Length: 332
Length: 186
Image (tube, rainbow over the protein chains, first blue to last red):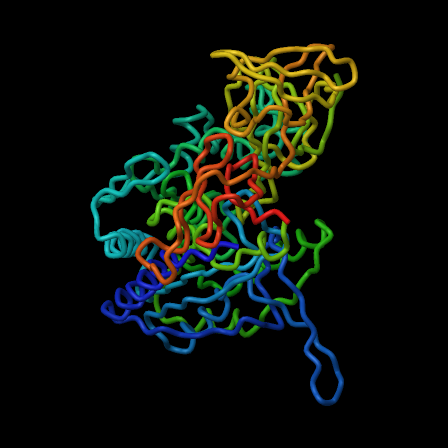
């Protein structure tokens, strides 16, 4: 087995620089648990399960966090202002292809009195601070990191790459028809989001962020369960994803703070989990209550550290930046 | 011809009216969406590669492919010559149809040839193969500036990054897809 000391040293330095960046910007670092009785409700994520055996023998199921999001927002509700967290998160089943390892390092940060536009600025400043260069080389390309980075809404991208107006395709029936007419094979697609991703992953994502990082923003509400709607009846929610060199690096949003609407959306996701044959988790009531105590606005982001390091260190596989990737440990 | 809903390495599919072999597959999970499989396809005629993302459960048209054991004989500037083991029949393939294989083929290498309608179109190497190290720099312990790897040359002339303990005369396993060192062979 090769343990690449050079990469490990560079990783160590980058991690130190991340902490420097946030400390300098008046954030405090918080630690959240790896194990939790109530994990996130994302319909398509599968948390690892484990059993806790207390002295009285009443065994309880705990889950390894797929993201520290719920805990981070509880802290905002308790009066914390700007916080960040570097933690391991776990997603069962996600392995292979050089972009996934079932456990990976997540950087999450949250700002109060802020929206998703403020987080875009943070991303620009953080990545420039980490690279120390204006132009980086990644996968035989040069990527220009100079501010401002590109910004395109999902609506614009579907128009530009596919000539599809999503606002005229808001229901499954119309969208299916549009997709079939243009020759997209949607035989495996079960809902609106499946068709969305079938087109997005084939025709848009591979080209994102090749010359400059790009923020892809304003996603359909169905793909942003914890994000704030753009306005009351809007089809879009204030969510963005950061892409660099075709890699999805971060996911962020202006936080939905209306606990009533949040509960409805979690119930929807709970229903969808049941439909998909997955464990339907309880709704975390403490999380809902804490949303009400967040005084103004808030925004939060999750950034995949291993993928960012792949880009900064010009590595093509996530295994190249990990000392102990699961693919090696399990020989898969 | 047929259809399949399980996209996996090694099957041949129709894409844009042409036959392609699936070279590798990658799990894709958009986080807010269900799982997809991103497949790397190699065109069986031109050797050109392409990436296509399939939804799990998607019906895809397939091509019937027969695999027959063969061995590599020799090459000239544009063609690689093989012999089918059962019939001793010889055939050649153009270098474009072979991907990485030319970097790993040595006389007598056993592999599978893929046939469509009795025409050989491509060959498939085993996922890992053993090679003799013909030259390797001596590794210096504790040399952190260069990391824990060094270059070595294997019997086919290919340069491979290996751990410091690998030396000339060793037999090592190499992944035929990414051309990377796997382990020392026993």
